[in-house]
Length: 479
Image 1 (cartoon, rainbow, N blue to C red):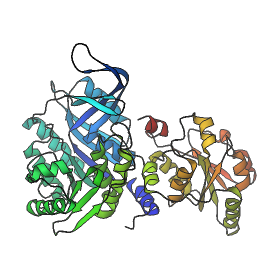
Image 2 (cartoon, helix red, strand yellow; image 1 turned 60 degrees about the horizontal axis):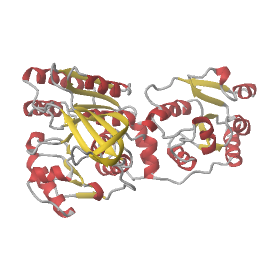
Image 3 (cartoon, rainbow, N blue to C red; image 1 turned 135 degrees about the horizontal axis):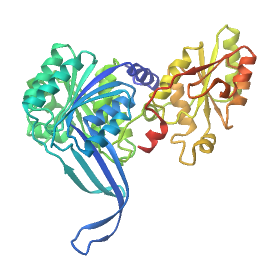
Image 4 (cartoon, rainbow, N blue to C red; image 1 turned 60 degrees about the vertical axis):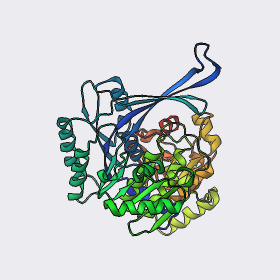
């Protein structure tokens, strides 16, 4: 795959119909933010004046949420307790209707909770509440039964092993064996010191610290890292090893000695929590959608760049990824687009029109645009300007400028033109472009769709598209 914004956009669309099975350790990440202005008189420790508490899905659940935010259908299998932490975790997971979560509940076993205390952007303490002993054979049998049944409907398997006991060695081997027997591609994110536990998986994704632990080598330069990973792949039958190197990017190592090093794409590093989960999810999504390994690695590197620029356990949306990959904004002035619409109509082609802010493009947007494109030969997007978005959504929006949003939309293979309007409504733009069809989400009624009367007056129509639940820019921007 040639790495370009257009090809990435095509790949993102291909992800929408893919299914991934995720098995591993789930946890809840809690972030307690505040400020420190003094030291305790009782002990030489800082006093944190708490200002905000946020909770996010972590571990295998974070992998699942990242996949869902990209538009994939996810089946998540894990173990957890019957406690308040499990309830909070389920609330976070259930915010994504495309995730089917099958937890095997264990009485009196706490669901893993990681609480990070932060002053400004600096983490000053982390407290882990967990029991990391292996689940017993009875529970493991339940997990295996669920896994075998779920493999039939999965395009790919992700094993997210955080070493919290959800994947005892015997169970891990049984799951890998079952997946190989069904011809499923397997990605394993390892925490064990003995890599033989993951023998024969298609892709192993350690970070540099984990690779050093596995190999018992003090690896430093890129050449040493690549050679060590290649030797490990040969020994244990791995299809390849992707080693994440933080500020140095990531390196893909093949058993035959082939290496592919992709430098880091992050422009600013704010928080690395959960970035590894984002990498695993992005590689899995790209491979499930038909990308080659090198293309998947490049895409994952860009996703990691987005993730580390955020606070907390980050979820990356398609619009953020496309913006990070980068492309030139299209021509968005009305006269040019009106002329093009007239040319299309004179050639006997129908023009559909959809409008919105399209801030942080997500699967809900992509679903609407996909259905809109089916209503005509050409699809034109009316995009609210930055000033228009602020008037409608408040001063905290948009999260992306109109130049970025128009470039993201123009990269989509189904979008033929993007026109930016500064008014509160697109009525004047609709009058100028004269589309044959207006498309909106079904939360509207046809009578309330702006421009419906004038479009129907010249023989056009209004089409309402069922919305895709579980996706909104507001929720994404506040996460």
